[in-house]
Image (cartoon, rainbow, N blue to C red; front, side, top):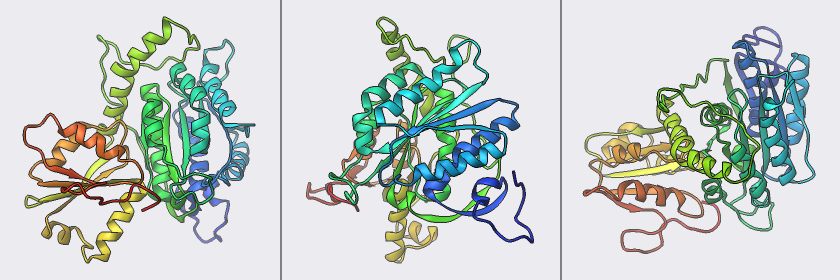
Length: 392
């Protein structure tokens, strides 16, 4: 394992997997493959013996992810780490296998402290695997394992029969959603996805669009670049510790459902708060309009503002514009939305497809006696504003 800067030697392509510290060049798909390897190395530094299990079915924008994971697995083997990659016959078999990776620690003789489980597939794969994934989510995760779902969205149907957006399905499956906007964020938010899964006992989803998966860029590496903060969550004098359980029959599943609503989802929400995954990136006392966006759409929104000449925080503030960046839009924290809304006359929500974020923000502000108008798919006169169809 290479540590430190490249120095005087020539840069090598495999540095993206072998280096621990420095700057490398990679695609978003390669960053997601490195993510698993990096977490195993961090776990080893903490004295944990963990392994990783990756299974899924390829499809754009994750069509080449299997090859990237195979390269990461080779680097893991050279480093004495256990990263098992098993391409699946279909997406539901992959989800069931990842569920098994979390239950492995409950079996006598398991030699690992935890197994990191990774499912990958495109939006139609999430559709067909939803029952298997729902069972996996109910079964839970091990506290030193964790399970994440890398969901490839294809809003413009570039390589799919139908255009897709998975946000509403992810909400229904009780998955925290992290949405990276570039290659660096794919790695950083992927680390947070594993951490929030370990903390809350939920699977976590990472939304991957083509511009991120196929995009390339330089990425800064360091083992301590992401240091997750664990939120306090008291359960009658004891902390919550995830406990995977394969007893998916009544009455156990009814108790798990209660735990979802009263413990796991609130804990995931608190994780986003204490780790500042949603931030007001531009703000002043004279703001009158707020713009909220997530992931790659956030970066596109900033570019659109730059094209209008609003290319610095000072110029945005002079125009009265406040910006909310949501790296973890689900579960949405009402407190950050209400803080963002103070003093504003209007909030514009920029997102592709269904107005999922717009609905969540309206719900957060509805109990307030004084609240701004929220626009997005339609303007204040109820006329079409941001398109519902296609890609922005």
